[in-house]
Amino acid sequence: MITNLRRGAFALFVAMSICVIAPAAKSSATEAAWARLAQGGYTILLGYARTPGGGEPLRPDLGNCENRKGLSDRGIQEARRIGMRFAARAVSIDAVYSGEFCRALRTAELGFGASRVETRAYLNSVVDGGDPDEIPLELIKAVDDFFGSGNQLMVTHPELIRAISGTTPREGEAIIIAPAIEPGDPPRVVNRLLLD
Image (tube, rainbow, N blue to C red):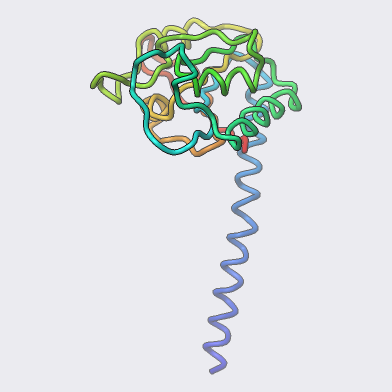
């Protein structure tokens, strides 16, 4: 019986240790990502904020947000909170780009100000049966050609972020990318940033 108690106590100790170490690891990884962004010169990929459930047509009337899927109330708060996190860290954002879908555009506008946002068709999700793993050449060029003292931020669909990073980002997670080592190759992931 004493042996079973010792095993149980040991198992509890291990479980508690994991719970203490995991948040610390996430926190230090997030701090490292913020420190990297403070240097400038990176591209930040951010998925659109939360939307209400249900599907929508893929392509019609991209600019007509009245008939498109918008953000949920929680998504609106999330988009604003993300913008505040960047402002609180004083991370310089030289340019903000968004796909043409209203949910991406609205996320960018709420987080970073409507006057700063420019749309880019290459940030739209894959439509019309395109290859979901294909990264638009325009996106690769935009990353390769960026040499700002701050960073550029792109709001897009999780599918496009997955094509670049190899994994679908969690809600409230940004992916930090930089040009590939070899010109023309896909951008390389240099860090991940938990924002929510």
